[in-house]
Length: 440
Image 1: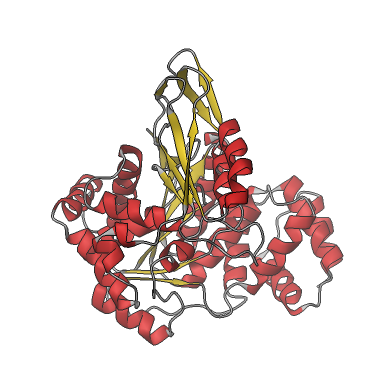
Image 2: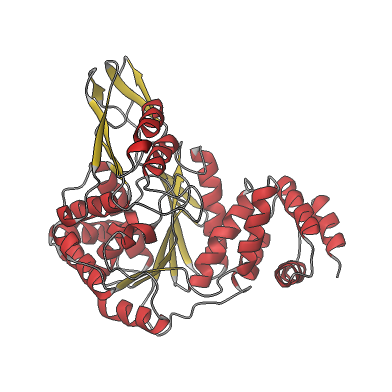
C-alpha cells in the first residue's frame, strides 16, 4: 500500500477504506509517512470531505494510536463531557458535581487553557493543594468513592492526533469539520467513558462562529460516537457572550460555587442544568424532564455543592475556598472600566474579552506562560443590558499594573453600544442525537 495512491484516491473524491485509514494513521504515527505527504492528504480531505463512516474509522484509528484508558475498575455507567471551549466556561466545575450527586460516575480528563480560552485544569489548580496529576489507581478510587474525579490528560493518549493537529495548524487545514471532529472524538474515545455529552459552543468566542457550522460539527461527532458504541448527544450553546459574569481561574471557581448554591447568573445556571440533565439522560437515569428535575434538586438540596467539596478534599485541595470563596487570594489591582456613552449592550466580542483576561495574567499566550490565578474580569454589563455613561462595564483584576491599560483598551473595544435594546438570544440553540436535531 502506498500513501501516494491514497492521496490520489481522496483527491479524486474517493472514500478511503478501513484498511487504508489504518495504514495511514499507523505509518504516520511511526514516522514512516513524511509530513509533506500527510499535508497533501489533509488538504485533499479539506476540499473533498469525508463520509461519516470514514470519519468514524479515522477517529477510532487515532484513538488507538496510543493508550486506551480502561475504566472497568469503576462501577456503573461512566459519562464524560467535552466543551469545544470558550470564555467564562466553568461548566465542568458545576455539572460534574451535580451528576455525581445524582448517582452517575464521572471520570474526567481535562486540559489547560491556551490563548483566549480557559482550561478546567487551570481553574482547579487555583485551589491551593488541588492535585490534577494523580496515579490511575487513585483516580479510579476517587471516582468510586466520591462519584467524580477531574485530572489532567495523562499517558500517551492519541499521539496521532498530536502530530496531525500540529500539521493542520501550519497547513491551513484546521477548519475541516471531519478533521476537527476526529481530533476531539479520538481523545474522548481514548478516555474510556460509556457515554459522551458534547457542548459545542457557537459565536464570537467560539471556534465555530455560526449555529449551522456548529450543528454540522455536532452531527459529525455524534455519528462518530454512536459508530463506536458510545451513547452520544450534543448541545449547541451560546458563546457570543462570555458565559456567566466572571472570567479568570479563581473567579470562575467562585462563580461555580455560587451557582451550586443556587445563586449563579441565569445564563450559566440554565446551560449547566441542561448539560447535567443530558449527562444523566445518557446514563439512563430517566427521561430528559426527570433528569432535569434531578439536576435542579441536587442544587436545591445542597448535595451538588457537598459533592464539589468532597472532590476538592479527595484531590488534596483547600476546601475552605469552596466553603467561603472570599478566602481565595485577591489580586492587588481592581480597575473599573466605565461606559463612555448611553445605550444598550448590542454585542460583545467574546474572543476580545478573553484576550483582555489573558493580558491581565489569567491565560496563556504561549504554553510556557505562567498563570496568575487571581487575575481576571468581573463583567458588570452583559448583552441586552441598559448602559448609562459612567456605568461600570467590568472590573479588571491583576497583579501586573503594566497590563491594565492594554487590557482596558481591548475590553472596551469588545463592547458595542447601540441606541435600541437588542432582541433576546437563546443560551441554547439546539440538541443533536443521531438522525435527530431539536432546535430551541
